[in-house]
Image (cartoon, rainbow, N blue to C red; front, side):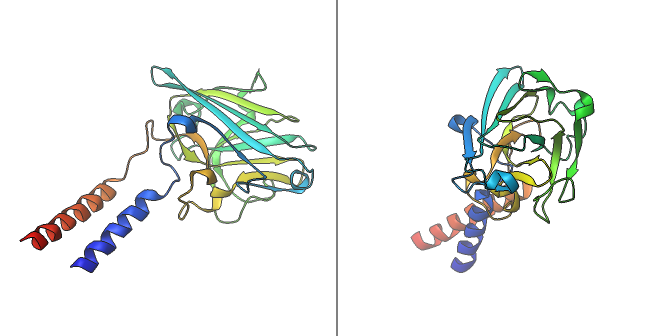
Length: 227
């Protein structure tokens, strides 16, 4: 019984500690990830320009269920960024989902024709995108030279997720956690992004049951020892 309880409790803690898609709060609402720290993977000209590609964000709650998201991508030379893919969620399939509202690039509106909602994967249009994982999100098919500042409002609260960007024909960047959803317990592997659930991420019902079961078994063993 003791072995079963310890194994169940360890399994519960491990699953609860995975970072991807969990809520972003407090000081993490304003933060950044850098190429030099190893948390941003780069390729092509972005990895040979001697600069430190940085993805920074500033997220503010405006009230009434509305959040403001600002992403600043800087520290890169030529080529200019041509598109950026931001992780959202499977139910963010169009502007009607209210996941991304009135986006701008460096202060100028991004037209609907430069926005694409899809499940993005490795392919010719996304050099360096790792084979296997994908991003269900939005593609901003616009870009600029340093810096690249994307802003929008959203009805979705922030959780940890992914980002990918392309420049020219072979330059790219993405957060290291894109390939680590099932294993990473480090928030620094991810960036903050809008949640597809419309609120802070919570454990699945099965997780609640597992936690309750582990707690009950531990209490049972404790009572037996005291008897």
